[in-house]
Image 1 (spheres, rainbow, N blue to C red):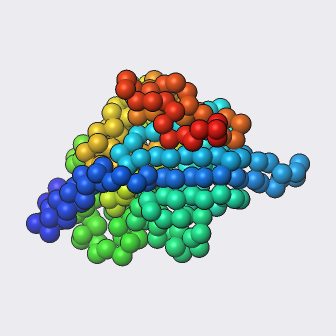
Image 2: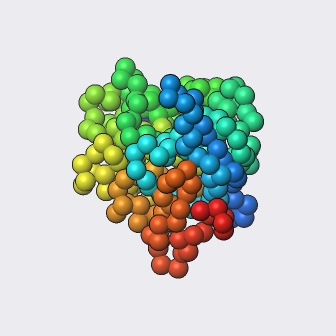
Length: 268
């Protein structure tokens, strides 16, 4: 088992200190105004969003629900600079992502965004440790530093004993925990999760969501989770439904939290 060096421990401490300070921020980490997204298809224009608005405060864990095809994944892609809006402004982690070119968007994603998808997309020829280290290697960090940080994150998700195993040797839940470690190894401010438990059985899904919740709190994240699981959605700060091209309050919210928070009056 790889040992953590003093330098890596120091870096981990700095990362946690930075994470803890994030929840003290007062400005919204996400501010979306008048968002529109239109695709040209063989049958004509298809508009997914029209005047969509969203505000997310630092530290929130927001669930987005809705029927298939309403654009939930597309919305995450736009927030994470994987897709561009047709119109509107999208400020995410203090950056107007709608104005970024391809190179700037890639750097933004690597620095500020952690992604978790329904399917883990781990590289099958690499070990769990190497998969988790990939974002740091892409950032230009040394291999030793990247592997030390990855080892630390595998401990965070209780998989240090599986660090040398390849994805095909891991269970579905273990693979998703590796994917979560990979998403967070770069200390992002925002976690975007698209059906992170959708490919898991009910028991495993609950455990993975338990882990996501714990990491969300301990690392001062702001998180948006797309899910069809209303039980899991109810555990979030608030739940929004994407319908008719806009976000609507669902009435599902923890005690003391307004379900309409983050949606501008008159924009529903």
